[in-house]
Length: 219
Image 1 (cartoon, rainbow, N blue to C red):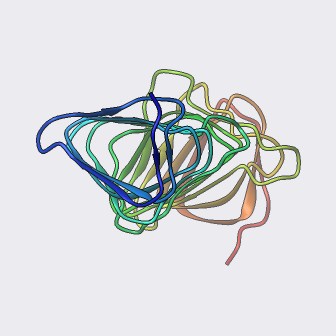
Image 2 (image 1 turned 180 degrees about the horizontal axis):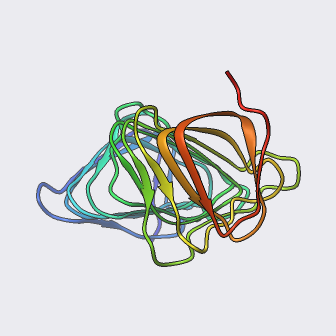
């Protein structure tokens, strides 16, 4: 069956799971969730209100994924915007996630009030602002970005914390792949050439598996 909700929707399962899966679901307002594990399939864009999940969160949409509230998850959070033309923007400053996985999206923006961990990511661009270390899992395909030549593929900001993105499958895209890189100690792995933009501040930068090109650093 399919459901259309023209106002905000709040689902509270207590300590139980939430499972709403129907490709034709459409929600005009914000969706708030409380429970352990959450699975949500939406046939259009989705706006997350207050989300508190003590386990995993699987979200599939056929449009942009945004947040008007704060999202808290502790398990693996899998986000699928349905196509490489749809954006994911989760930029509430108090957000905290478990490991983040992006199945398909165009531009992805993540803001987290704690350390940020990635599994596999497949998108056009990736912009991350973290209040802790930025890391990724060792297995899988890594972070694969499809930004066109002369575009900005990635930005990672974690002032005072380490950035370690060393999965051997990483491919940060085309020219000027990482325009912003701010962290205490930074380690980057890419499958081919990588150029760093002018806006980077780190105590130590290590690179592997890549011919590394660096533009002049910003002040």
